[in-house]
Length: 238
Image (cartoon, rainbow, N blue to C red; front, side, top):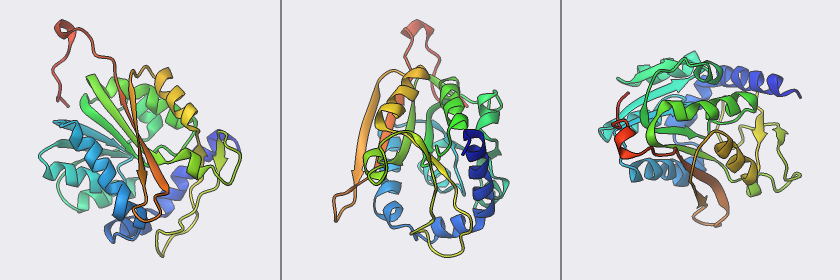
């Protein structure tokens, strides 16, 4: 499977399954999200006390709505028009339809304290272009928070190496069609991606299932370099 084919198939699959995904998220059908990973991303964002955030790959908008209820200015961005439409239907909010390629090309003019990619970095070339563009979406000293499947656990049944994998909607409930493929990265590859994009320190956190203690996800918190105080831009502006 060519990388460009995989990136395109991801968008096709999410467009096909936008309604089913919305029902699964709003119906709290995904156990790992309900019990662990939704709370983990919220805790990570709140620990930084941001005034402004941009959620890249926001889906049906649950995270934007939750952060807005905290008094945080939040923008949600997604490539799938139906998901953005469902986000807008759920209540007021700043939602925009943009692909990662469009963002990488300069189509998103924001400066936020925090950029969030919550289980939304599934592709290969489009993801790499997006991550390289994220420092330009952040104020100096801003943070990119990425939550993704825990690589050693997710790669346990296959060679532990970067590459395309077939996806599955198992555990998400009824109504789903074609699954989206995803591009697997090792922990080392994730760290190299952040370094190549110009991020400085990267804090890594692992979530675990509360019963089995099996790792579920890893959160990367990658900070941009902070310039001298005299050159810093005041944070929080979008």
